[in-house]
Image: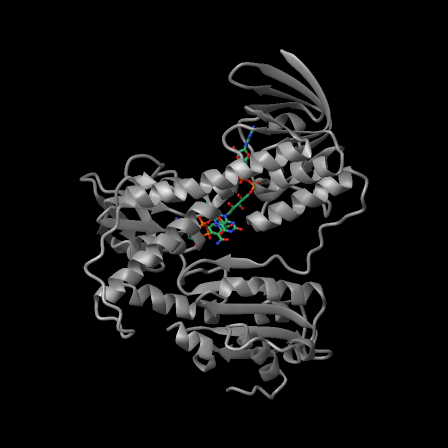
Length: 464
Ligand code: FAD
Ligand code: NAD
């Protein structure tokens, strides 16, 4: 057993933990980060990055197939095919480059990384078993950044034909028929990707709409695209388990009728849960918020010197939220005064078309007692969208009626994820409709719809 002492000990090397480790080390705080699997966590290894790589590959393949079918652009392609093993290899290369970079950044800044699974003994002591050594580490500050795990359906555990996003991101071969359970982020992002890769895809969703976390107007173009792409949707349905004969999933409708869906593979994407088991967390008896560790606006848990960041601290389970929390905790530990009070945590769904939200929707503003005006600009009136063959969708701005302060943005359309930066900057900087409406936006860009949405809210849009 080796004894170590440090000021800051981070458990988990995902985006929340590794950013905390890098920033603390930058600020001269003696830091140890413990990671049991791979640096980069869910995000870099089995989440954000590999999913976006697969989505991109699927889009490129779909484009090639579209060209082979008499493209209106006059492009001719001979019948394309895809080598999925090569696609996965390419995706793994990106993951390796990024995770290697995280290790290099931690090292460059002076944080020590220990590869092994941590067990919490008490609020100041953690034991780590590595391949060759057992460490007992004493710390002043303990940061829990253990992330989350996919939710399993108890009657249909992961294994065999029933897979989580992790397996879906590294297919050995493409299934003929994929059934996706859950029309949320993962279900629709990966369901669409598999459809574009040529699989037959059906989606079973418990609620009555796709992406139920977003407002209906925003998801309407996504619903239309799901249908256009040939994905079969079963809304207001619940799954009952695999049929005994195999390769069929039993589904029940809201009217209690049952039917069986042919399925070579079933991707269960019904949410993720904070990872709170198997590492001695119960020894701390922390206050919890449901299954998440309860934290205050500085990410302090209910025990002195213990912090929780990222997915383990609850919703929204997004990488950029975890990173922002990690950076903040490192700065507080180094002596700076910080508080987690962002004007917005943007969220993007990388479906086709993409969805992006930042700040409040009109309904959320009304629920909060704020009297608002809105402005919506459709991509049918945007030149750049036409040249991209993508006129579905719109940008919508939400602003206070009394002083025109912008309180929210929503957009749906091709490549609108990149508008997240402009949306969040305007909210953090307290921009008004007049500020954005008077800003010259480059032509021809999708961003012109951002300016025009504000002008429309003010009653004098120019191009609609
Ligand atoms: P994690 O990334 O889960 O990292 C936790 C780390 O802690 C893991 O590496 C784990 O091995 C380690 N660990 C746990 N327990 C121990 C222990 N006892 N000892 C040592 N190490 C331990 N978010 C976005 O913002 N945008 C996206 O596009 C996006 N796409 C996604 C796509 C998919 C398919 C999935 C599954 C998720 C996606 N997410 C996305 C969510 C995002 O991945 C998570 O919000 C993010 O990874 C959370 O970061 P974290 O650091 O809290 O936890
Ligand atoms: P989700 O919460 O986005 O969607 C789950 C969906 O499953 C919901 O629509 C829900 O109504 C449905 N559902 C729940 N139980 C069901 C059941 N028994 N049968 C049928 N449908 C059921 O969860 P997810 O897609 O698994 O993603 C998990 C989390 O990962 C997200 O909430 C998000 O935090 C993160 N993520 C983010 C991104 C991104 O930022 N682009 C991408 C992927 C994942």
